[in-house]
Image (cartoon, rainbow, N blue to C red; front, side, top):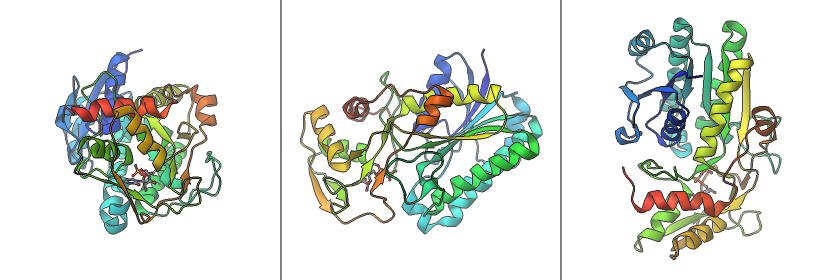
Length: 326
Ligand code: UDP
């Protein structure tokens, strides 16, 4: 059935892939984005409302103008280091902004909400593979803001019957194989795009943050999941809110970890180029290993990531970064 969906943050990396998927499924999509980190060119074939979640009157106007069946919320400040230095900005954007959105939804009678959460809600992992029973104990303001919203959603389910799903992404990577949209952050801090940038530009060297971790090759291990697989989980989460009340949460990853050195090797294979790198000190706040158990997402949502192979994920990123559209 065709739905009308508001995608907040639809001009950003994961949001733009979500919009494309929803359009392919025949849904009617409106994007709301303040374009602080998103890209106008990423919004293709959907209406763009250029607005900030801190502007409550403008939000009310958006909900007056459209009858949404569901809201997907990708807008957020999302850099761990920056959140440590500027916590007020993070709490304001990620918590106050989301509260404004939820209140606007409540006034308009919109009852279904899909929220971009993060592995950072878990803090330092106490298990090699993280499932939803793992304790939540964020170690930075970014993770704390996301966990606060998850708590708000649980309370909103009780008080207002809001149906929600929080999706905790591990390491999103890759780009749409159809082209035209991809990852483009300023500044870029993520491993895959920086490794590709080093492969493309011989003047650049990737810094490997920490080579003395207690891992097989001494570098950090992460769980890389393709952005289109994340989008697919959102579609399934939206379907879940149609049949189930309550506030739900799922961890989304491939269940397989790759070290920084393995990612560098993958970029080397895919690009056929050398990836110049140098060993650098550890980056503050990096846990050695972050790998998701997505058993719950598989069992409850029927989600199976299509991209299991790191090279396949990196290949789509490489195709985008060789000739980015924005
Ligand atoms: N990393 C690195 N060099 C970089 C960027 C990242 O060695 O220039 C490492 C980082 O320390 C972490 C992994 O790559 O262990 C993934 O980092 P990213 O920032 O991509 O994602 P995060 O895991 O922080 O969400």
